[in-house]
Image 1: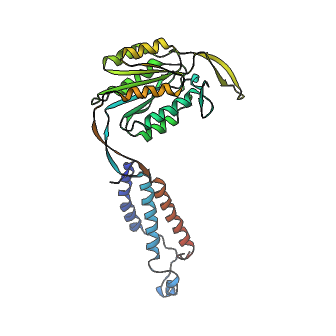
Image 2: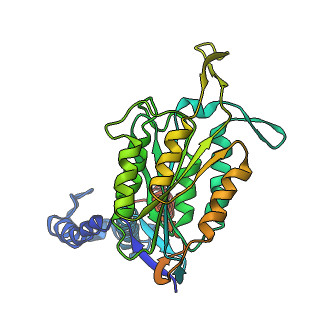
Image 3: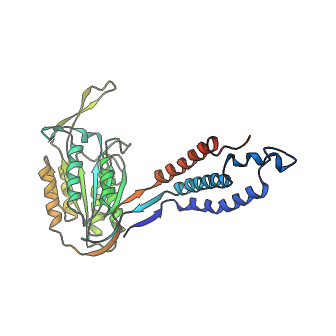
Length: 334
């Protein structure tokens, strides 16, 4: 079943002003272009344009104005509605976007690749393989930000994931506790879930944040949220970052606080993984597959198509047609 709607319906109130504007225009009338004493003087000009030409041009302008108002309201076409069964597993992935994720100690497509690109690629595979799970996304570095709440709209989720860079979070540092807390807060709002899981992906040591990772883990355990922690990359890898001239310079050796990550996972009944390859990440997903599931029915639109440009284009086309007719076939006396 398809559906038509408006994203900004408040603009539609302007349509109520159109009849009033039309009445005011008719009440005031247009100023005379030519003043004459007898109709006999102008009868020979009657065949210059059809009698209804003025009404036609008037209609074009009002249709164009109506189209502009509808365009402002952002019309959208919902392509189908589908009822789906959700698994009952709600997952929030908290991903570290600190500069150290640019360390190139992974291999991708036969070439050296940084940790962030590999993490995004494997996470995308995971999301595509779990269509029945609500999945959310947190980006953190010195602070944590919500990229997407837990949702079944995985297209929206992947669009946000694709935009992740080390510039996404402006604050520098590695606030592991903040990343976990933001994920917990999103999951705590879901009341009908049987399994609530946080996947923490980081490659550094906690060095900032108002709440520590082990404190956030204690809070998660208290409300039954399981945390899987993943240490990304190889210990002792040198991080190279471009300088002001674009040349890569050695910055620092990056390491992982495995003891803390292991403590966070064990405190919540989860598990710690060391991910020096994509296989370690996939091991997390296999673990999630074994969790107990419950089913609920939800409804969502598959896809929306924004028709703003279509309505705007039609309105502009009507105005252009009005101008062309005014100066050609339906031109008036000066």
